[in-house]
Amino acid sequence: MNVVYIIGGGLLLLWLISGIVRDFQGKNKIIQVVDNNCIGCQRCLKRCRHRVLDKVSDEKRTHVFVKNPDYCTACGDCMNACKFNALELIERK
Image 1 (cartoon, rainbow, N blue to C red):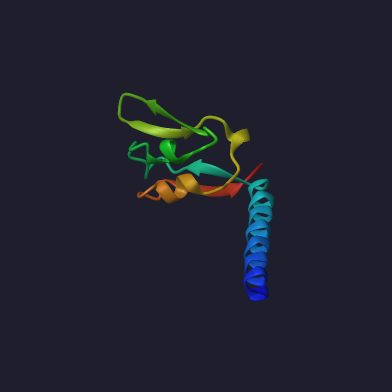
Image 2: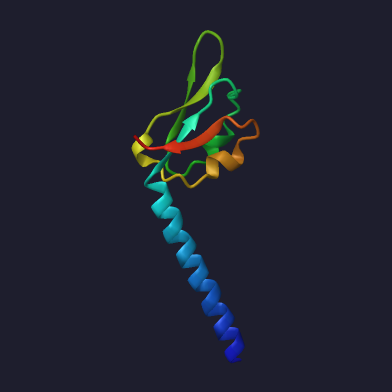
């Protein structure tokens, strides 16, 4: 029974440490849209929990842009949703 507690405690500790590292990395990074790759499918909009991204339509096409960069935590959820490599993480300025 003690082995189960040790394994469970170890997994909990790893989960907490990974969250802290992710938060620290997010303070230095921000999402950027690669316009040439974006086809306007809006999968990233649906995945972003922080409402960082929005869509814009011009005479040529619909595409995504970064609307609220201050809300970006660099979690990568939008990048995982994008099938066209239209999103990348860059250093904050």
